Amino acid sequence: MTALRGVRRDLAAWRLPPARPARAARGFLVPHWLAAAALFVLGFGAALSASGYVSLRRAVVEQQARADALEARQREAQQALQAALGRGAAPAGGAFLAQVDARIDERLRASQTQQSQSFERQLASWQEQADVRRRSDMAQVAASLSYLDGRHGQQLARTNELLGYFLQASDKR
Image (cartoon, rainbow, N blue to C red; front, side, top):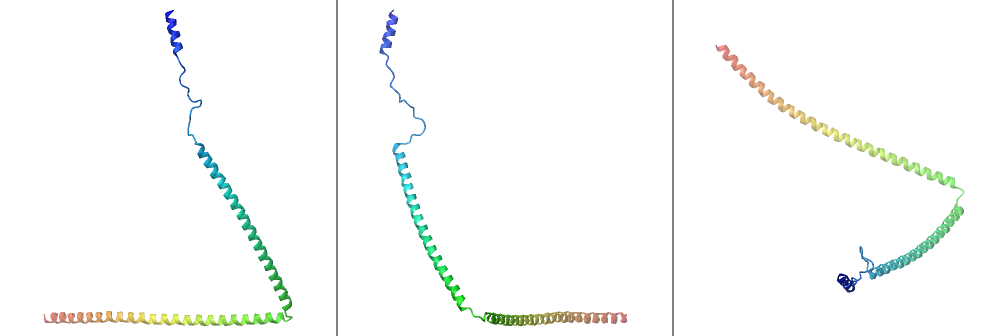
């Protein structure tokens, strides 16, 4: 029994261990102020984009109004030109067109004549340059041949002289 009394005393002295937090911290904990800052930045960006969209819409509407005004002015100018052409059209329109056609033909013929003359002058210039070059080449060839002929002639004269000496020597024997 004494042993049981010791167990009772030990059980009476036993206390619960200090309490742990109910949930264990796992992973990365985000502070509350960081979440609030993210919401603030998100709200600021949304407000900024909404104001940008509104200003963009306003600019598009202004541009459309300017384009409509310009188109109206262009239509008025076109109508004015058509009215002016309708009133100013002369009954002699065919004669005017014939005159313009004759002027165009005349200028075309003059241009063709001028081009053919220029072409002929250029051909004559090329022909003259080719003749000068040919004459120069022929003079160089002639000079080279005369030089070679002169050297060859000297060699022939020397050979004839040596043969003459040889024949004289052989006659003396």
